[in-house]
Image 1 (tube, one colour):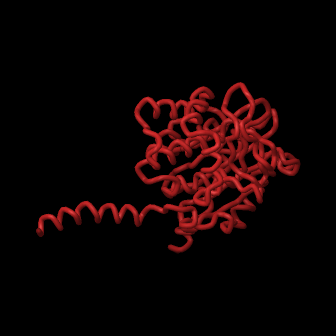
Image 2: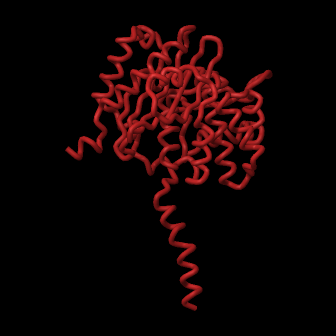
Image 3: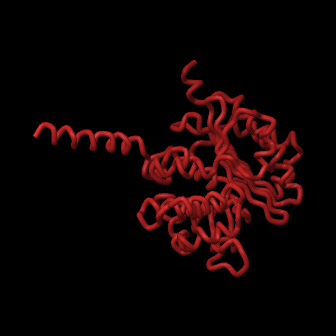
Length: 300
């Protein structure tokens, strides 16, 4: 009898410990909306001004969010046009990635080696064919339900909108455009930042699936925008998704470097937007690395 109880404890205790360390809902995380940091905000505005991009922000052609999550319980947020929903090209493929992993967690989708290869192609090299295939596995309407669900809240039809996919990545029309801006593939810098905050905290899916998601988003296969800009800052790990279409240039990343973690998101609508993001990346990196985290401040 003792051996039976011991075996049961060996099975149960690790599961309970893992569950305790796993935020299952966005409500378990600090509210990013309340995390505005005046020092980081002034720094972001200074970087934008120094690069000559203030007028582009004022015209609504550039949206940025920057979040220091070194101390996950005390994030620091700065943003410009963070709640402006813009067409974001391939960046919203992160929503399809989320949908596939949510369906896997629900037992509705088996992520075998072949499917994982397709998902990886969708993210690392931004294959439109792969994205359309994965979207087909999830289902367009089901994905919209996931994005708007209380657990995630990545799109708010009564607020600023957010992360949206309403069309396959290929020829043909949209099955449902977003109700606020009529976009087929859209995002706000703020909601994309929330996606990465939840990814880092294992709050999108369970830790095992989160590790697989992060692996898919690692080793970017296209060296441009943030990735190109960060070549000047070696020794960093990036989990990233970008997007490009005509004069739309978007990028997003969770960055880990020297014991620090931060999120940066940029959405640009300008022929030179890709260059803007290249120049912004190292400056935003330096800004975060130069601002003490809440943990560092508390330890002084």
